[in-house]
Image (cartoon, rainbow, N blue to C red; front, side, top):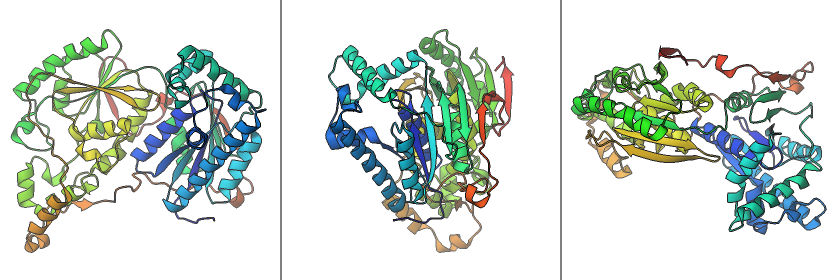
Length: 495
């Protein structure tokens, strides 16, 4: 049954031979859009096939001349597609990612026609790769850990998977249908081809994918050393480091050198003194970025939490009730910070090894992106002082290590309050105070609401404009020249 909705409904349909990075792309897009508050879900046909018919380690199952294999794979593909449509209709889904080979014109037409009948826009994303070393690396890093090859000799498994690929190659047809909206990524984004990109969400996804790379790298994050405001229990401000914070700054270069060796590293800080002072003894190229400044506490800047609770009890209770969406008067919410940090995330996806010296709220938002935290839990992630967090991006997530420097510091983490605690605090608020002029912070939205606008279209659809032509271009320009929407100041070295 066709469902009508005011929200856009977009299906990203993956296209590509096995081991071309389709699932990597699907998971990255899902994590990015979810971080931005857009209801997104991946539907992986391989998982449906294993659930319905069990693991299939032998490549003959994927032989097009094997009628049983063909029937069971079609059954899995239809089950995933039907579930995806139900998710759009029942769970108010916005973006679904249909992760399968979809390697023939007939198959893509079937998927396209079925989804468009349900008022779902279709955006094909094809991953092409001719680099055999990249393909083999993907097989060894990702495919051999699949349930299909559990407890199997790695060399034997790799040989079987290569034979599986050959079964698909014989009838694979690359995307060239001029009437479809699509994007092609060639050799992990070294070349990008787009066709008929009209929608706002599609354009955001295209821009995001153009920033991805698969080169090995590490992302280090550290809060500034302990500040004088930390010692005094105050929030915000632009205070200097405490003596213990200065000691941490002196120990940081040795810790970085010990774990990174002589590899290249770039250092980003905010424009605030405590982060710049923490980076002072690091002998690497540095950049001060305004977008990395701490969450703006507005009229509460420079106050302790006890002072806020005393002067603005209703606001204090409201923030505990919905910390992600609560915006200080004259300041920001975590939701605002995520929107502010989107250009930083785009830039991070282009980088190699990098160290971000930042603030608690800022690093929570960045950490949540890489580690796939939801909006409700994001404001309570533990990012302690005098600790370096190391993230190593992998195919479907990140490995994490934490290095604690043996220098004492105050604990600024406030655990997530229980619902009973929040209700008690709200009940204690004097009704007279509710009428008084207070901080007047506001809950700016609800959890799960998109952080960015998700306008359905940038341009009229083909049906609304008979003169619409195919917009097809080979995008080979340097992404670094694109406007990221926030000023960058280099402090030393070239970057």
